[in-house]
Image 1 (cartoon, rainbow, N blue to C red):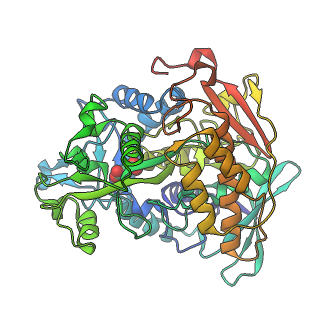
Image 2 (cartoon, helix red, strand yellow):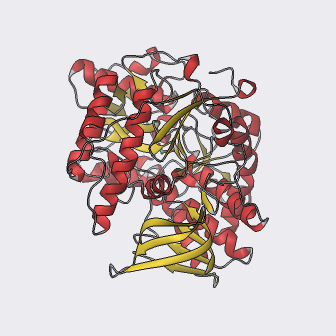
Image 3 (cartoon, rainbow, N blue to C red):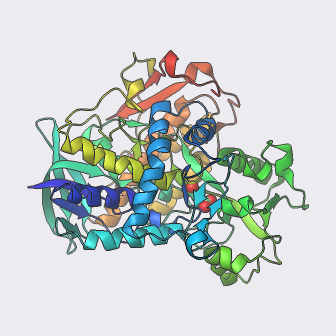
Length: 528
Ligand code: SIN
C-alpha cells in the first residue's frame, strides 16, 4: 500500500505529489492520459499573486471576494492570497521561468492585469503560455523524485471505500485490465468538467471524473451550479476553443458589437476588465437578443502582438486572421467549474481518507465566480496544505472553508428529482447542457436538462466511464441550478434576475440528496 495516491496530473496533482515526496511519503500519480496532459497546460493568462508593492494581500482578497459575489469563504481566500506569493516563489525555485521586464539583474517580473483585478498582479510565462511552462517544470520535478511512481493512461473507475474510509481506487490500466491501487490517503485533483458543454476551452480530458467518483462514494459536492464561461473564446469550430486571454483586454483590447460599438463601458465601471461573469453575460445577452453567434475583440492597438501573445497569434494565424489588423470573432465558452468536491481549508473532504484540491475541489476560494488567474494559484496553495495535513495526522474534515456552511443547520432539502432511463451520446449530452444550462438559464431550460439526462449509462471502457461521469456532474449541476432561484456570479437565471438574500448559502449534493445551507451570518460579506 502506498502512502498517497494522487488522481490527476495538473498543477494541483503534481504540486501535491512533489510536496508529499519531499516530505518522505511514497506517492502514486495516476492519470488517464500522459503525465503532461491536463487543463493546466492550456492556461494562458497566468498566476495572480500579490508579489510586490503597491499590491497587497488585502487588495487581492477584496478583488477575489468582489468577483465571488458573496459566496467566497473569506478564510479560504485569505489563505490563498497570503500563502500564494510564497508558493509562486517555490515554483520559480523549482524551475518555472516567468516573463520579466528588462534584462539581467534589474529585470522585474512582468505583471499583467485581467478582469476584476484592481492592479496588475498576474505573472505569466512565454507571453501567454504560462500553463505549458508550469506543467513542464512540474513534470520535470516529478520525474526527478524516486518516491513518486507515475501510472499514465490508467483510468480511475471508482473509489474504494472500506469501513467508511477511502482506501484507494479501482481503475483500468493502460491495457484496459482492471487494477486496484490501495493508498492510506487519496487526493482527487482531476480538474473540471468543461466537456459537459458543446463549446469549451477545456481539453477533452476535462470530464469531471474526480467529482463523479466523489459523488458515487458519498462525499459532499458543493457550488456545482457555478460553471464559469470565459467571455472571449475565438469563435471557430475547433475544439477545445482557442482562448483569447483576458490579458488582451488588460493590454487594451476592446470588445465591440456588430456595429463596432464598445459596449462594455455601459455595463460596468471597469468596462472590458469587469469580472468575467459580467462580461460573459453582456456578450451572451447581445447574442441572444440580436440573433448573432459572435461579437468582436479589437486587439489592433496591442504592440508586439506576436511576441507578447504567441499562442493566440498562432491560433489566429490558423484561421487567417492578423490580430494587428483584424478584429477577432469571440463568444463565451465553458471554462472553469467553481464548485466541486467540498473541502475544508486543508483539502479534507467529508469522506475520511479522501482529499481534493485544484479545479476538482471546492474550498470556497472562488465563490460564485472565480477571479481571473486565481485557478493556478488555488492548486499551488491548497495541494501542499492537503499534504501537510496528511503528514500531521489529520483524519477528519473540519467546519472550515466550504464545509463551514455544511455544519450550519439545513435551510431546506430539495425535492427528489425523478431520473429518466435510456441512453445518451456525448454529443447529445453537450447539446442538452449547452441549450439548457449555459450562460443564460431559466427553470424551463434546466428542467428540460433534468428530463432528458438518463440516470446512468452502461460503461465498459474509458470513453463510456467519462460519459457516465459527465452525466453525474451534469445532473448535479442542473439540479442545483434549478433550485438556485436567483442570479449570482456565473449563474444567471432569466426568470430570477436578482440576488436573493434567502439563497446566500450553498447547495451540497451527497449521493442523491441535495440540501441548502445558509452561510453563517458572521461570515457574510458586504458585497453580497
Ligand atoms: C485567461 O487568460 O483569460 C484565462 C485565465 C483564467 O482562466 O484565469
